[in-house]
Length: 287
Image (cartoon, rainbow, N blue to C red; front, side, top):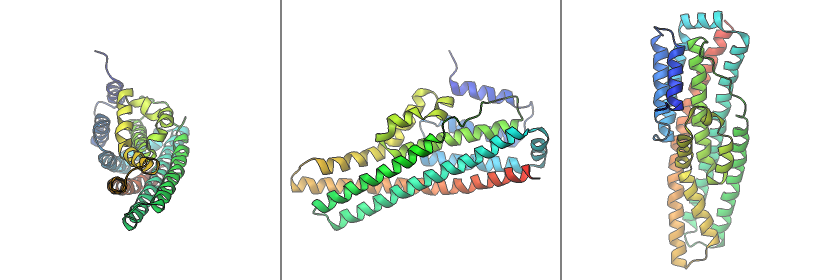
């Protein structure tokens, strides 16, 4: 039976390590394998927690004197620049995801509040729904820009390099995969066709079926909200049915807000870890 891309990648990773790698490198690779194995089954919140553990492990690795020495002695200037660029790219993507989540949460919260005050429905609610949908276009444009910036930014893998460097580059790749999934969640169904053409990272390391499952699962909550809102302002119903529809939308918005809040908190924790990793890299380079 042919091995999957993930199995090939894991095999290549094991070949890139010395016969007795440092335990922290093994720990990092174990976290990487867990994230890859749960690509289509874990929630985005769980993936963010997994990334936090992964970057904690990477930070400990960078603090080891022997690793710092090996990094300085054996890494050329181009490779160092690539690692620093990668750490900055992760911070930029994390910030873009946080901004998109915050905007989505605030808009959902505002629309919920208006729906509570105007339970009877009417033109007022429809106007606010249209404002919400318009604000979603702003978020989607920002996501388009962020994902566009990922194109062509991934260096070729070289498994003959220093094991620590190889591990750091794989950590960057897996982190970008999760960010891409998260941004796909915030974008919702309207951008799925465009997002699929930008799924460069996923295509490098995930089977096509798994990458598709990530997009479908992540988009479901936003898709429900947008479909319900479009239906609310385009379908004529009786007053009782309309009120029921408004209540349903209100509940969907509340569920979305709760999910977004969890993701925002997870991203904030991860952002702090990404900053620590970048500072450690800068300290090693400037040592």
